[in-house]
Amino acid sequence: MHAPSVFDFRERDDMLFAYLSDSDSVNVTSVYEIYPIGWFSIQQRLAEHGFDTKIVNVASLMLMHPGLDVERLLARFEAPIFGFDLHWMAHCQGSVELAALVKKVHPEALTVFGGISATYYADQLIEYPSVDVVVQGYDTLEPVTELVTKVRQGSRDFRSIPNLLYKAGGEVQATGFSHKPDADYNNVRNDWSYYRDAPGAGSSESKLIMTLPNTGCAHDCGWCGGSRFAYRNMMGVRKTLIQKDNDLVIEELRTMREAAKRSSIYALQCYSENRTRMHQYLDAVKELGYKSVHFEQFSLTPPDILKKMGESTDAYIMLSPESHDLKISAAAGRGNYTMEQMEEWIPRALDAGVKGIMIWFFIGMPYQDRQSVMDTISYAERLIRKFGGWAALPLICPMVPFLDPGSQFFEEPEKHGYRIHHRTLEEHRRAMVEPLWHRRLNYETRWLDRRQLQDVSYDAIARLVEIKGEHGVLPVGFCKAVLRTIDETRQLLAEMERALELDKRLPAALRDEIRRYNRKILAYTNDQIMPVPRPLGGRWFDDATVPQQMIEACRASPAASSPAGGT
Image (cartoon, rainbow, N blue to C red; front, side):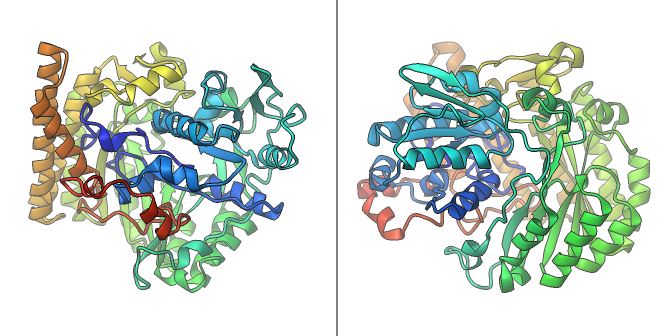
């Protein structure tokens, strides 16, 4: 069960799902309806042991069917176990609340949580009444399989299963965090066959899948909960990069069959792959005819890999220097190339056949003040002037809503110039429903407080949008629409802030405005690369499990199913 970031988001008129407050850099809404790809591995492993496991994306269903009565839907499900991901902290409010509703409808069922954030906060998470079991670890295939086997045998004695915190006899029991495989991470083949002809996208429509060949990282970006520092401390391991069997990754690619020719891949963490594995991966991409691949790269990709990328597919590279300023970039955990070196490398990458490079900058890094952020935007204009825009496309986003618990900056804030506002799981849960998004942030820096982080985010992105319009990178109409959204958002945030300061509450008329705005924002997705509203549905993580007739049977009243604004 994948929960929305805020469970009752459809009814909220006391908080703003504001543009830039969460996930506007990618093609999901502020509800964070994307779920961890590792779920496929768990589903596959359980299937291999004879268990029928369904992935139900409740967040996606609630977005696409605003009249859906979730409690009535849950009542239709029959299962002894309901699993919930708490991988990203953005789901800390919604996942616990959805589990509570499951407990209400199915009091005898076992509720199980897992993921990086669940591992970090295991001791706190297990204390919630809606949580029966927390499975710790980065690869939980074996513990989860043993757990499901026990439950199907009618047993609730989990003492022999590693990595668990669970409730027994009113007490919390811990079985020890000992299952930490250092090879063959998530050692199953993910099966994309369900998505080949998924409803909601026409047969000729492009599809996007993801590949994840490893977990953990050999690098140490200070803000990241998946970094070397975080994995060593959170998972208690020395080896922090665990690779998946490359043959299984390639078998996953084959499961798309002919649909590969109209599919793109977001290749996660390929920067951690060695040359041999990368060449094998690219050979498979070429053989199967995948339309395009977006490669995350930590360093400037070497010539042989660039050549191979260009020969294999329409390849796009995503770089994340975080700042144009090498001091800030290095303090953030990058800084392994200068902007001058990057500018010399870009033509070589394009000559090798790479179709485009996306250059991501981040707001919320050490030493970064307002002037530095705006200097990054000035540098972005230089890139656009030099390379024309799309060949080397600069992008910028704030680090929202949270600095990752377990990351170096979260664990050692003073050393790196940070102040942490929310430490416990419950503090983060309460923060997720703060009316104003700068108060949701769990951090501020010595150089930018939370309100300044909010303000400079709008200033920077508005200016970058203007620049892209001026240089013809984006159509003027797109740019004007984004700028109108930014103006509307800032005005509404200011009105909310004034009302809360004066009366400690939001007046009815303003709540109506908030509801209208939220419905509009959550009615579609977009991203910074091409900021055009996209209809919901047809993505790999959208729900493909619950039959349409079941959805129709679980709708609320007709009035509730057609809210003004059309979510």
